[in-house]
Figure 1 (cartoon, helix red, strand yellow):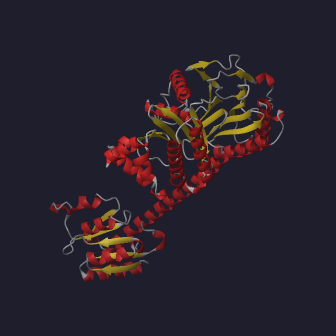
Figure 2: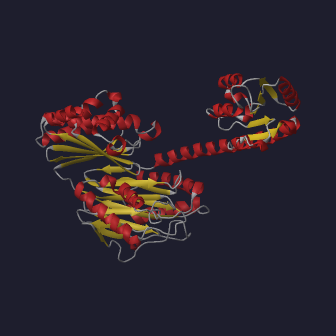
Figure 3: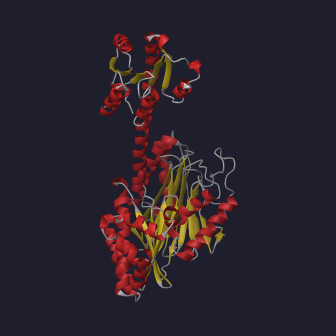
Amino acid sequence: MTDLRKTTSVLVVDDEKLIRLTLCAKLKKAGYDPVAVESVEEAVTLLKKSSTAFCSIISDIMMGDMDGFVFRDIVRGFDNSMPFFFMTALDPEEGSGFLKRIISDPMSYYLPKSAGTDVLIERMKRVVASRRIGQFIERQVAETRQSLALAAHIQHSLLPPRAAIEDGFFYTSRWLPKETISGDLFEAAPCGDGRELFIVGDIQGHGTSAALAMTAVQSFLKNISRGGGQQDLEPQHIANLLQRFFRANLAEVSYMTAVICIYDWKKNEVSWITCGAPGLEVVSGGKYIEANPWKLGGLPIGLMPDTVYGPDDVVQTKLPEDAVCIVYTDGITDLSRDAEGLEKIPPQLLRRLRAELAAEAVDNCSRFAIPHKTVNACEAMGYGKYQDDITEFVFGPNRRNPEIFETSVCISPAAIDAAAREAAAWCSAHGWSEDIAGRIQLVIEEKLMNVHDHGFDDRDRMREVAGLRLRRRGADATLTVWDAGTPEPSLEVAAGSAETAFELANRAMNNHGRGRLMLREICRGVERKRFGNLNETVYHVPFDASAAAEGAGERK
């Protein structure tokens, strides 16, 4: 696109020498630097050398073998904003239709030659000045977007990893700004002795002020989680620390609703306090458990100057072994069918949806994907209009199923290698052959290194984690990988056939050289799904290696 700040040159294209000379003289007098040619071919040659050298083009319509409209079409192939002024002696009443062709392009203008050069130059000044203002606005918008993208990266870098699957407990999250930046926050940090701190907060308001407040509060939470004794990490004490922080630093800016949880996974108990936020929800066996029948809790943090949170505001909840705990900001309850937010998702529908997804996740050991599937299901039912930022945080006990290998993996070469080795060791410990253990290890390494190399930019990769689940299903070992990297094409949708699907996936892994071997000779098949920004990839690795080889032969 031509940058009009940097040039006053005007390209004049006309096959009449007198008109060229007259226009150039007038343009020079008006402060422009005209360049005149007599044919479209010469003009195209000049523009291809430097399309940004001119602020506008003045062209005749009828010029030998190539008319001005063909010339304009050529220019639009590489510059769709160059102002184009057509001067012609043609009569618009003759029925040639040239006037319609001129105005069909929003940056094209018409003047009859009889109007004179002074009228042309005056109009050109106005158009070029207007376009300069437009380009200035576009540059400002682009700079704002870049600044917001950087701010979003800073916010993301302050958040904890999106998920963790550990011995004794798990957590997983979805942090989804309505725009680029968010006023929502969450924190996850160990307290020691089997206790985990989980906080979800929602800074009231929207836009830059809420996002800046979120950044300040998130940084403060990092300091809280890193210091202090066990007493300092009780829910009411954390709430009071946040209250003092808000009143000292953000009292004139906003306040925050929050849920603060201390989860003791050894006792399977959670102590929690709600500060003006939707309370903790607990699902067990596909049904909701009333976690706070007494309606305990306090006011939003920072709302009133004299608020003090005490032990009477804290709820103690004993969890079932299959419990799934859900904490969320009200953005998800504001999901609507319409842009105005008048037709929001019914609360009972959302509760039923969460209960079903939680039960399914417990049965299938797919807890990693719960918050992503929740938002995805709401959108699939037509509630896809966002009114606010969305954060959903899910945690609970993780009692290991001895027949299933589960873990979360940081997206780094060392962590990927360690996870692949751990999975192979688990296979061997469960009596699987050395061959199948080696093939599983190779699949994990190839998949996660591909995510590492291509799924994230260098700024975001360090904070990302993937989830792994490995189990036996009939004659296959099924390996499920969850990651939030760049989406991969769906087998059925993008490929239409197994042959094309395998080829697409192979190409994505060519950097490591073994992708073709893995997909054609190790796996019987691959399935891919996408839930918002979460990829779910399932690899079917046959225990009988010849089965995959036969399948690969059939695909050739």
